[in-house]
Image 1 (tube, rainbow, N blue to C red):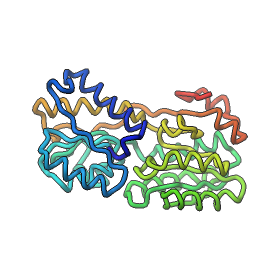
Image 2 (image 1 turned 90 degrees about the vertical axis):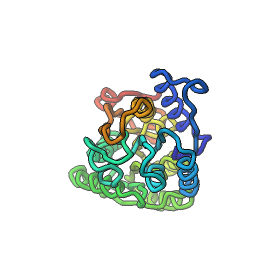
Image 3 (image 1 turned 180 degrees about the vertical axis):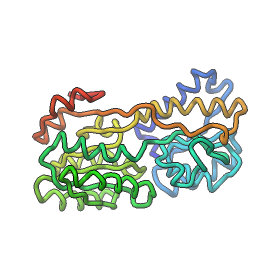
Image 4 (image 1 turned 60 degrees about the horizontal axis):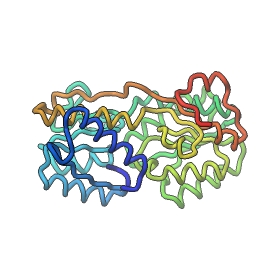
Length: 293
């Protein structure tokens, strides 16, 4: 896993994986054993990748790209099922979606076109916004594509896009405090493990500096964020159990195509909107999959 063990979202994802395995006949302590490793920082993830590979498991589940990279460096033979990886082909994790090749397959996180939707939803819920900061993990190749996609739609929406690359607590606070000094500002959190790890801090500072913010996943909004648009991360782990099951029964990762999300969810927190002095238009609320009141 790419988060700390005390992460509520991480625990929910893991529970979904367990449920998916139980549904397919795998019972903990009876016919399957699962070793869990939680890596909230890069050093932990690399150490745990080496440790898990040395145990020679039948299959390894990688909870994100930041976990997958050290695992692929540690083994070219043990089957790996990844979950929540953005652009696995572009990142070089697999050869193609249809024929991943090697020892790795799994579930892609989202298509880059979704990045443009974040700006569109932000403009709908906060129409006065004209300058938007994009919090992104500069170490991820996918961060470049996400930002480029947003830039391609920003002009038509009357938005100037500003990149922010510091995702430590101090850097986030300094950047947002300075950015929020001018009116009509908004924020987008792009996909990346660093942003996920700092979710509570970003939600807190967005509220403190009154920055309407769109997030990539629903758990940000359930923690107090304004709105999100992206795949159901819990369901993705439940679906991941299918590939673990098929590999344990003898199939090869190279024969299992990388799957895309089957659904994207729009979630809006009306309490947060009210605190920011915003009114979500009825047309937007009608399209929402979940409204938190």
